[in-house]
Image 1 (tube, rainbow, N blue to C red):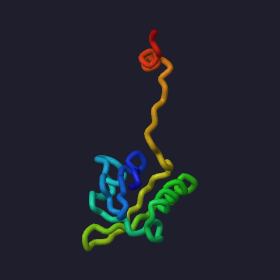
Image 2: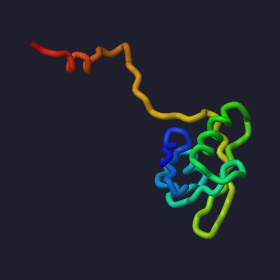
Image 3: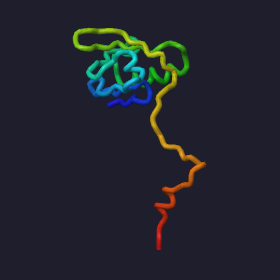
Image 4: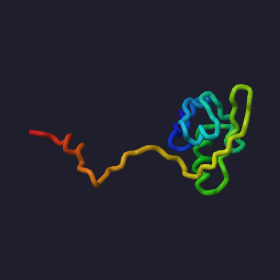
Length: 109
């Protein structure tokens, strides 16, 4: 599975089919739905690594990422004008707030 929820708003399963689409995300805005299958990325057969490479490469140029997708018997080309690279959620310490978790996890005698 390739989770691109925080990148283009979709999760791609092992069979290249979309298993989740984030409401209001880029994939949703381009009309992609659960069950849509990605056939090709920038004119080359789909692999998850190829899609991630295309997303990273888009940071360095202004060309959109082009996907050939299949939904049932219909094929179409979708262009993502996205240039932010791969994004994944992570936690960051807010130094303005006391470290309450540290207090909870300290050993007590």
